[in-house]
Image (cartoon, rainbow, N blue to C red):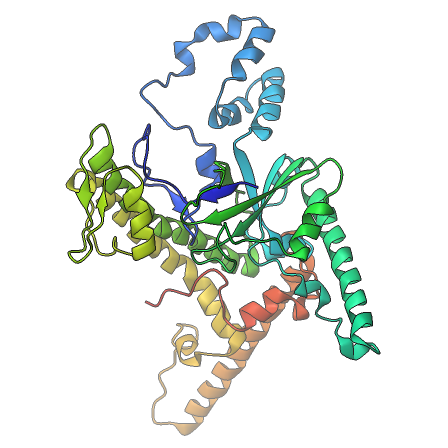
Length: 447
């Protein structure tokens, strides 16, 4: 059972500071699929034109060479000739460091396409899956089975356990249905440092978690990975690369909202990475190709850091990195990151306008905003009849727009395969969410 720690800025550093870093709330790095397959130029990179002999090599030798390619190169090779494409595809999807991330709650509830922002077609190719178990609870399967339906508690418990076992079997069937090629699955659990479970050394599996592991179907190897902010003695580090599947096609009124939510999520990941980047920059400033121990930046703190990584752990536990300016050497990079985040926030504000307006229609709010639309604008003189006509026409038009918005939203949930739900549209989670004007991944930015 490996323990995966948050990114350790303690080096050794072989690459520049990554201003495109994405992190979860707990500090774990993730990478969107588009960045994962994007070629990263390095000083040693060469173009294909620098190796024209490749095409003249025997096929066997060409295939042997591509076994040494990284994932981004393999992805590019998947667009070439058929025999190279076939081999590159096998190598790309079996790349040992890549684990494609899905939400365990999504799998637990049937893995309907409307409940996620990513596409599901790609999942049919993945061989290694990382399942976020943070919100997976056995109560989901037993909530309808309480002792009041049975003569005694023992009977109620027996029925509840049967339901949990059936739920776990359904969970694994869903994994195999959505990811038929998956042979290795990591169940990711967050412990300590903000997680809902105890620290690594004190962690014990519940009967529920043990059952999920033990009931794994043949052909799939299961691992359990514990995430915590600070590494404890006895923990084995897991360095898997967690890849976020690419987004699905966002279309129609439901797609407006999910596009906004997806953009918000990416913004949040990059905003969360700012602290990781700052601490890494400080570590690099003092320990990259040099050894310059330094004291904590808080005057009343006596901590001193003599080795790479010590400052990062101290900062995470104490928060003494709050409000610190980046080292001058890295200031241009942090200025660049700040500008990028400001642009992303502006994009979010623009992307949120259509769905914000649709929410207002569905909720029946903000008639004044809608009445200011050119189609509704009217300047009554001192004629009460004309004012009454204006009021009635605007009310009729408002409710017609509201009705049309509702029907379009509900129709898409029932008929668009990309937004399918477990329940009919009017009882679906999507409808309940948008009817309340809520955005699951972040609030609407106020203008």
